[in-house]
Length: 189
Image (cartoon, rainbow, N blue to C red; front, top):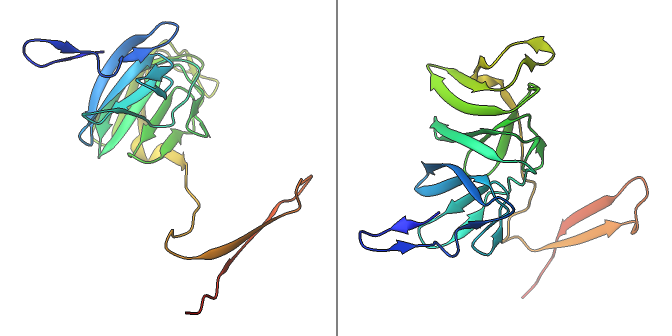
């Protein structure tokens, strides 16, 4: 991947690299360039299959599948990604996932083979690919689903950074249960 400024090409911090180092598609989303393909790194970051260029440097979207992402499209300010993968972030995702800019969501269907294209019409997502079955039902090469069927999403658990807290984790090492206790610190001036 490279950027052309009208007279020369820039490799964007060495572009993408990996065993194949191939770019399948690119998509603008939330003023950033998303590059999808078969690669392991972008610039200095480990970004498997999807890298995000912010105009000056690369960063990761924590996609990390072992197989390529082929195609993407944007609908309702969410980036939909298809390819050959079984994970998106920490979620199980059968060849299709969506990204809102912070976290991944998965469609709760199982495709028996890769999805190579995605498009939208009204409130439906259409996919095409080499699949012959979805959830063990014979559906060949082309299918549609309601957008609302994406109902498994990552979520972050955290505490506000500007609250001082005390943290206890026990027992260490844990065998069956791990306890985490948070409490506010009483600081007097």
